[in-house]
Image 1 (cartoon, chains in turn orange, red):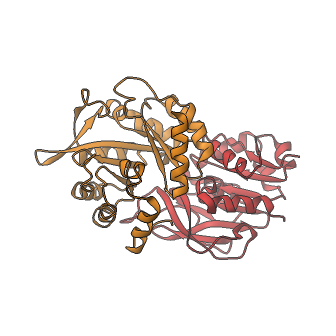
Image 2 (image 1 turned 135 degrees about the vertical axis):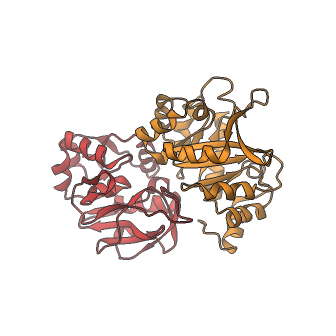
Length: 228
Length: 199
């Protein structure tokens, strides 16, 4: 299992990924934390930044992950359960470490935040509007937002550029698009239409359906500022 | 003799820097011991977190004059770069004053969020051994909210809403605003140049 993580990390490093995020999306619903022994090994291997998401509920959890070499920690459900945690993490480690993941769903003409999305049985509305939560987490000290558009997630029909552009308009910190990547054109549109700072994808890279080097050249040819 | 001493300024994220040197077959020593720092062939001043905390830790450890008096190659990284300068606007804190310059808050503008987190194209502006093999347009990984404006000591520049010093050099001191340990091959080149630099 850890071997697989390391192999994948090395593959993406060599293919030119700009940053890696390691998700344990089942961590919050099961009320457990990530097994972190692999974080040090990943850190030794990587010469690009990486972020660890899942099960970070306290300063001590965050310190453990950062001490093992992660550059950032991403929190989602625990931030909704205890918003004060955002400010505490920012004060202790600096805003640049603190990524807030937001799962957002289009519903009744609005965008609403969901939590515990790692487990379909526990997934529930967080009783917050997405744009309000985006504003609040910034005020509390978030350094970056990863917005996962749930309607798009897994269907590979493109990022939700409308929602991402609306979030961009109220977001002064780096914004990363997540959910929906299925073709290289989707990456180009999200940079052009929603002006996000980064685009995250998983399955199309895992399957090598979209090879990272070709994607980056395509984006560069279309005037997206990107490292080749 | 210690080949590379990394000054232990109490920041959490030293692991990635240690690993980056290990990938170059060097095992640095993380230390706050004045004699070890003075005696090392090369010294790295890293830094994460806030300028005031970092300066007060250096003061408490009696390292302020030790660092000022170093004559071997010294590399400041990220906050470490700002600490080598005169002052930071962050909490308006006095720094080491080794390299002229004041760390100023990055200005927020459309399409330029702060903190600046990500890969920025960087351009060498003055010849320096630390920049051997680095080409104009090479990308490095930056994470910062403050930066040193361009000056006569700037040896490489990058740009966010406005241009800033990506690297500074003065005598035996060099400094990088970016994180070479997380800047892929280009970053590894900076670290290996540092290991070969003689002053």
